[in-house]
Length: 122
Image (cartoon, rainbow, N blue to C red; front, top):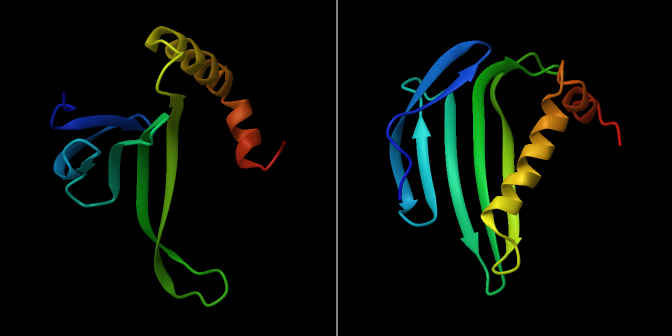
């Protein structure tokens, strides 16, 4: 089953709509973009003989000045949620518990732990 078209995410309190722009392979990648191309959402699924890896990736592109040359260049950043699991042994419910625990830890109160992650703390 595919994600609905369009997809919407809220970025800095602004709902951002992204239309489906294609699939590299209907069973492995779904891609959604804003009309301006500034934001892309990719939903991916890969598998090996023993594992599934599923990703939900939000990417932002923008033009910014290179701090050394001051030349304006396109840059991008992504935040990725990945689920890596064996093909057997874990239920969807157990994986949802893990996601909820991680999401709760990173988003608790002021996103302090995520800020620590961005700061390079270990």
